[in-house]
Length: 204
Figure 1: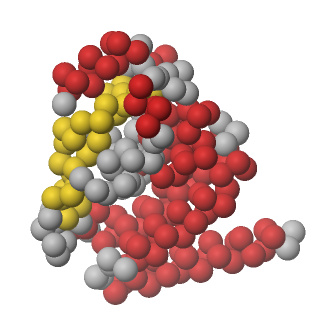
Figure 2 (figure 1 turned 135 degrees about the horizontal axis):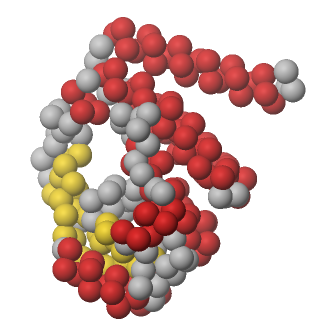
């Protein structure tokens, strides 16, 4: 996988090069799948596989692009020049914040339609699943993602898609909480954010 990504990056001079990802559902089905549209790169138009492209060309489907770090290589000098790191104040769900920072900073991006990595989904061994308290980090992560999108003047263009993704993500992880104490805290955070949005919309 890395050889293919490296060769493509060298060929195009890309800051980011990414490949398709096979997913493995560790929840119920125990199935390998290359049809997961979030991970298999099918969201990209076919022409994108024949050229390098810019972030601006992907704005319409930015929220549908896979943020998983596996399956990507990033030019080291690009990271150093832009001082991009994973956020240290978020223990879970930090992938999206990091992804938006690299993606929206990049000058050139390229793709490789190669399934070089298997991503295990819904694993009880992952930190996101093992500790329900970690799931509370999703609120901070979405706040940081929104701030990042605003920084690059993208948020207003994709506001509806971002808010829809946020709602789905928060409800998805709420459904996976087993600890009743965390469920109560999570619900309070959901209610607090809903109240904040209502107050803001009325100018309070």
